[in-house]
Image (cartoon, rainbow, N blue to C red):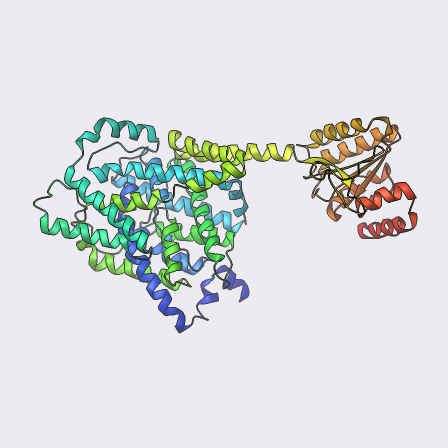
Length: 576
């Protein structure tokens, strides 16, 4: 039963559900549903789909995630970022809004879900860790800006081009902004103002619903005066029918790059918001691989009911938590609201101006442009700052797919650079103590000419073994002919591969020929096992291994063989 609860988390919380939790979940579910319905319609337009598909995307995936998701507060459904990625990728394969375009987006949801599901089943969630926080921040900020700028076509009532390369959109805006529709622009800007004001008063106020009602009332009562304002018009009623997306393997191959982008972005969004909500309570813990399974099932099952790729929403998840939602019941209530809307309420949205939807999107996505993180990294870590800027600029000017590839590529390059050139420093003894510390940070430490104590702060492997050797030789040569003992403080070394081991053995032999002893201090058990299996004891004695640096130096100076013999026997037994 315990295993079943891990696989289907709803079985963990639903049997223990308390009546006292329902009030908070009900209020949260209604609040999120009120926000989700206009957002779903708006985000479908970003994706290049008819508005009804935004509501389809908000229905089945929410229910599936409530059953299988390890987070009880994350809100799943259509989001602006994924919608733009969908539009960018699919628009190159079919005419936006056409039947083939719709069919491709639904097939894309199936592909994305299948990849996410397989990653979760095979416990491969760790691969997304290669997207560092600066890359995520730069990518998210650039995509948010791109989405917002692309919505100026609906906000101002001008048919600007749509592109994920911002320079093309800005150029078109520059040349054609003079043709803005005054009525559309006024309604849109008033909507923006209303949303911003209400957000500042209280984030839990359903500002999206307020501007939707405002826009509908304006067009219903004064439609003859605003006949040049573009409205949503007919949204069909009824539930999505069940059908399996048509499989075209040539098309699937073309969709794979955009699908992989959606997999990474969607998973990162879910984990990021899930972890932030997890920290605010003690009832449950996020399990990354289970999140992949839940997202995968949400997208796969959703695609059978005409949903395009969905993931978690930053804003809706936060509102869900702030409104009192504590379990997946709130998501089920939100899905029920979408169900009721699909069955009975879609005619109410006939007069909804598209400029109001643009206002909702623009305010939502511009809030994702993270200036604070960039300012913080500029002060705290210059390299990470430039990584953020490079990802941000490349995503803006080269497009979403290229942006994330460049970001991941730069992350890997920086990872290789940092691991291949780790921190290596000479240590000195703190006066009147048994401790050794970095001589660069502690000016009063005692440095002896005949003893070199140094620390290597990384795993020792093929990428940094030459760096290890060169720096060891530099530190040793600085001591000159007086050097008699080298002590490697290995506490920071957590792994050693065959290349690192051979480099170490070669240096030990090199210094033995020069009558310089080589001792180890603080070697971790797994690393010591690797050294012993690599036959290092054929060139040095087991008595050359010490628990602490101070013990190694004292042994050299005083020959405290009794204590060292006890330690040598101890580590020998541990290895055996």
